[in-house]
Structures are given as C-alpha cells and as structure tokens.
Image 1 (cartoon, rainbow, N blue to C red):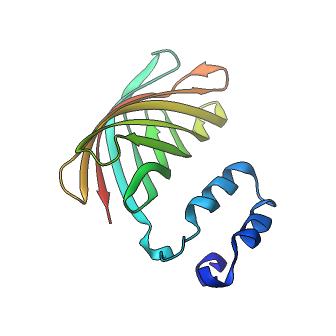
Image 2: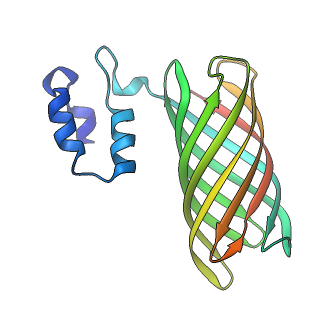
Length: 174
C-alpha cells in the first residue's frame, strides 16, 4: 500500500535503488517492474486472470487425470513481453500455490509464443513441499481483452517428476 502513496516526482531513482537493495533479487525485479515510471500511474498496470484446464500427469505417469490452474498476472501496458503471475494449481491428486514469470514474443503479434517458469508449494498425499515448473505454448489474441492459449508445463517436486500439465486456457485482461 505504501508504494501506491509514493509520488513518482517525490522519489528519485537513487532513493528507489536504496530501497530495493534491502529486498531479495526476485522481489527487487518485481519492484522495479511495478514502480510507476514518469508519466505513468500505478493503476495503469495491465492485469489478467487466466483459467486453464487440461490433462495432468504426476509421478512419472502413475497418477493421471484432470488438472488445471487459476492464475492472476500483471504486465506493463504496451509491453507484454514480461509478465508476473501467481495462482492456484490443482489436479488428481495434488493442489498447490505457485508464482512465476512469463515471456511472450513477438509481443505485439496476434499469435505469440509463451515461455514460463516458476515455483511454489505443492500438497498431495504423503508430500508437502516445494515444486519448480517450466513450460511454454502458443497464445492467440482474440480481442484486446481476451486471448486463448495452449500450453504444456513440466514440473519437479520431492525428487519426482510432476505434476505435468497440458492445458487450454482463456486469458481475460483489463
């Protein structure tokens, strides 16, 4: 909340850097991304909500079934190359929270390639701990606010492969 109240004109770049040096590298990257630039307000960040559903495979294919994700993301308006996202993941037999980054290129084309990476917390029968993920896919802009996507994600947790997810999704932006 404090970031919203700081005026761009009152906080110099040097003061921003001093503040950011106290944070972890990922938080530092996110903060640089989120700080308003001259002539830009905090409210101008482009927000997105994505629903993904598909086929999930866990534990080298021993646990398979429906899987999906609900993610919230942000990006700068007019610069859709780098996005930050966080959300819920679920499938048979797991659930979790994750966060990550996503790259889309070419950024202003109607059809684009998406690369993503992240990590979070995974909970399933007999396991509760960290998960890392990576993947990619194709995104097609249907309108300025709606995009359809097909993605594949591979993950690793507790010394085992999974959960992997092949999904179709709808991205709503505002």
